[in-house]
Image (cartoon, rainbow, N blue to C red):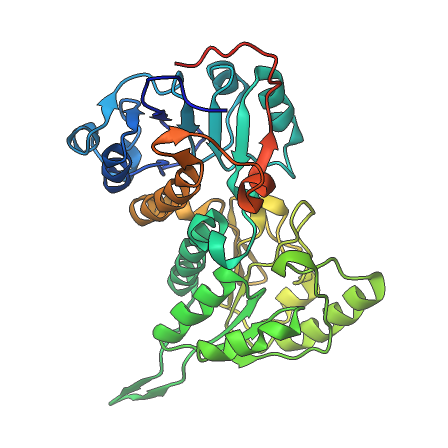
Length: 372
């Protein structure tokens, strides 16, 4: 497909409507760069308000304030609702987190609507696509924020303190699952002065854990999957992992869990027995709440206390840091969008492995386009 003959490709930025969502898909700096390439950007009034970006900032960057839904390309953060899909034009492009593995009905609705959908969750983890990897950029925010949450909930200092009254030992932090979020959590906890340890079922990431100054917890259970993710453990492996983690977890003041298997429920790494063996006042921060949580006692979206152990299971932590999270996300969107442009016009090449991997719907070419 190409953009309308003789017209500029238009990009629409709607206001996010999901509860608690404060991010916006584009920021003024990215809008300015897109406009400089000849694109027309339309931002819905108030789209950046929750991220502390006023409409005037978008206007100064070259955007117009108006209806974004009739644009050639609509860029979002959260998956669209059915009502939002109805507002998209036939033949248009939608870029955002589209939940293809967990909410397949969205892809079907986009197909029926004749919309070309690109899911940022499916950006392949290859060198050329790093600038488009929104999962990683937002995971960095989540990992950082998780440590601040843990430090706030913990009853003990993170760093070692030497005072006239004596020396306080540093807190010990264990991170389970050391992808992007986990590594950021380890690095942030280390900066706060904690003693840090990382664990993952993929033994090849041990060097990455050590590279951020943390120790590697070797439980002798490995589950290497495709695409840089972990695979699901077998029943025997899961039982062995649980037994060994039960023993290891009790020795830490803070446990942060980030383990996810794409399209599957989060693995239960922290059973109730292990929680109740921890020292009173310890903290668990479970970043896998959207997929059910890594801790058996987690309640997604809530912070609970069980046997004097605080278990926080926040949802959508990146939305709690909307300024920088939006800035990073906008750069990911910009990189993907620019890969679809030829001389400023929309012309996605489906021979491109990144576009082929991220595209979840392609409209029937026999349908009449109503874009433009």
